[in-house]
Image (tube, rainbow, N blue to C red; front, side, top):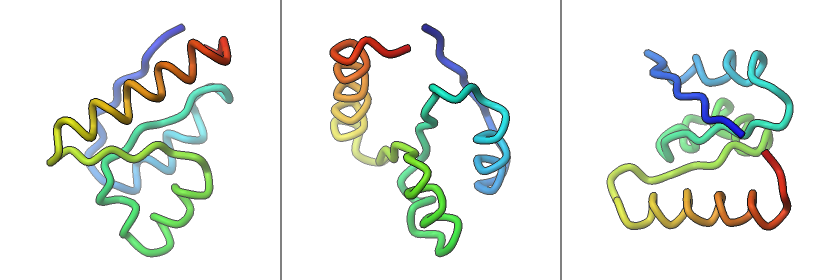
Length: 76
């Protein structure tokens, strides 16, 4: 198992990163991207996990639930 941390400069960089990361990886993006029209819809349909960076507890809960799912389903 591994974590890829990317400090991209623009929201559109996320779409390019989806092409180069391994198949079993799921990116986590800030929730604001979800409201960017076509880009948001494409990200949502591709399975990106969105976190609200302004609500710390909610972000922690989303990431914790993702980690539990990964352990439960034995995925990397």
